[in-house]
Length: 358
Image 1: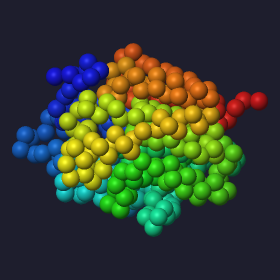
Image 2: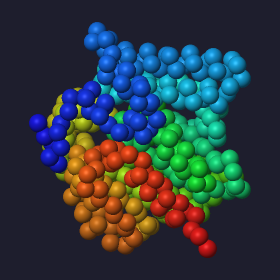
Image 3: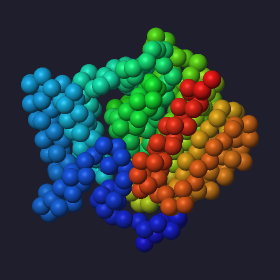
Image 4: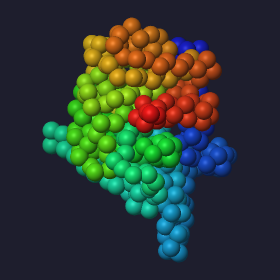
């Protein structure tokens, strides 16, 4: 079986074990081997939740011995394990895994180097939770990247990408928006995500560590769609990265069954048809792309489930934006299968935009 890009459609567990995403986001290779070779009587969810518990114990031991950095690293690994435990499910396991992921990352946050400072802002009475991290070297205020998660990725999952930005002197801001992570129980997916991004920028730009004149936005997958929308509608952003994103969801019918289930879940839809209608109506930034005027980097894999034709849509409509378009001929969704190079190239481009050399 293949999807519309010609790529093989794998069973969900096979897909997870074949994604470079897990490794690039910090899951140890040994953990993937362990998941693949586990006792058949142990479910995917049970295995990864146990892995999370194992890392929690290691973190507690390290912390009790005064090794706080190690403790933070273990708690992050536990948070990632819980994230991928719940990834395949749309029932109580989803909620349990999400809660565990949040709990373990909150334990990690003050122990990380640099620490992750939690914040909460309010939009229409709903709480938008997030984290700010600032470089440990150099003098602030720092250029800042606002990172947007995707259909099932959340603020806790971006730790490794944050490290790449922080090493280049760029502060990071992450948060859960509608339909994501901690916010989902209050607010399912919405089309006006830019309101939530802007509320987070309202908060961040007042921080003494943040240079409000040098803020960029980076979005992965669905977050790439949100990044285009946010940069088009909030002129405080001076650079934008759409990483495996899209302008519209006209190709909804070609999505894999698992992706359609994810859409149904995050839209809180009762039926497949209701989900389809909501997604195709809400996820459409075409009418706003003429407002996009900042340098924008578009990265896409030729074998992405998201049609590469979406890049052409952005190119045709974002006529006033300086576009850097990178289409990887061997890349899958978000080019996770190509190792670290695509991510390094993205952060280097963003560094050039936010920290131009004189």
